[in-house]
Image (cartoon, rainbow, N blue to C red; front, top):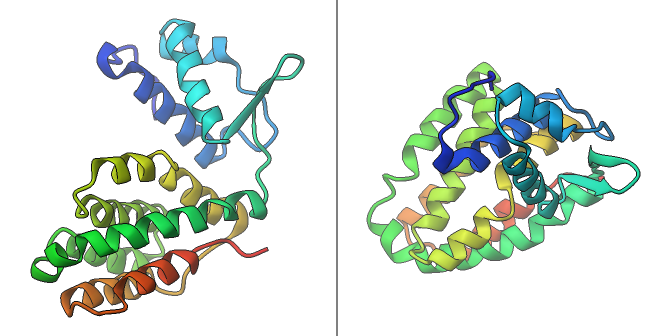
Length: 210
């Protein structure tokens, strides 16, 4: 994300949060490295208050940590730390699959563009696109459940951040993102009776391995 003095007030905190997340994922801030609140505020030409709020959100995701003596730093996440999110996510998506099954059995058009994009990303080895469309695919699956509490809870897990970090920091990588997600689409289309278990196993299969 390039610096910008034109951040819109209504989404200021979200844009600052995105800026910091992109910096962590890209390696601008490495594990254990300090993030200076004042420096970010100066760089983005904003006050320190929304920067502080964005950092609080990221601390709740366990992406950063703060202490009186050391300030704010990027957490030195291990495979075990990243692994913890997957059983929770798998449970949420298992519920989402059950709720979304009737809708997606009739129409999987919300999922198919992401499979097509993953096929292209697999062919070119574009890891950023693989992460982006994998997360978008699963977001559409959860959204299809039609349960706002479920979607909000899923979003709160920071799926995109942790998927990106699993790939970048731990080398977690599937053989074919497109084929694995095509299998899920096909299961919805044929109203597979084991659909929810299949989705759960699919998510757990993405977890980093120690």
